[in-house]
Image (cartoon, rainbow, N blue to C red; front, side, top):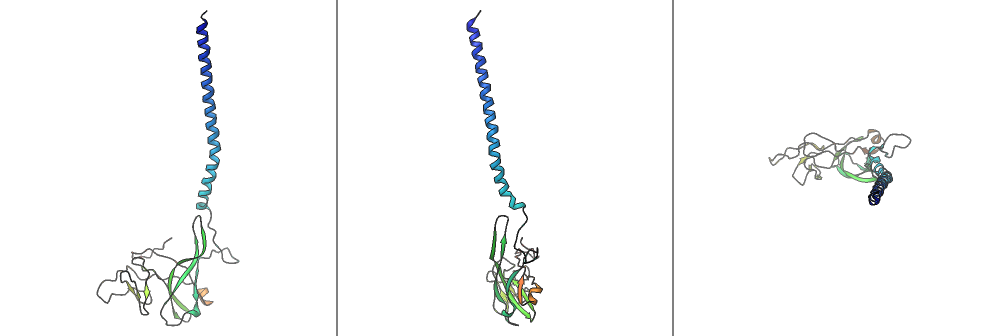
Length: 203
């Protein structure tokens, strides 16, 4: 009987069993680590993505479920008949998937009272390249590239013979008729893409 051969065989068997046990332990450790790590990852991913899918929760009009998307500009009494357009900053609520900020500056407008119960509101951004237009009392002038508009915001033909670079007239904004009847000017403020003939609202 070869004793040395039996001893070698036993050692090889023990080494094989030890290797299998190590492999099994390593596999189980990996599985446990993956399971334990999955839950924090899933929770973090859900927290990151949930704002993208949740319903927007904006302040609503008191006593209703209607979301208020109009912006107060001024009182009607602050506007004189046939006076030059006045410039106002517009405040509004800003909301995206992760943040809500109330009463932030959203843009500037020009307001002119055209009748006792009528106003015209124009976005103060030039449709040509996005500069802020100014009013000299008889017309709107863009200081960047000399675009010009009448007091109704309509594109003017340049007196110098050069082409008015603006592709369209100034952007008029919708006025809330009910609020206007109550003596206040409220609008649905919007910005529009510049450099194009059609009015495409920015979202």
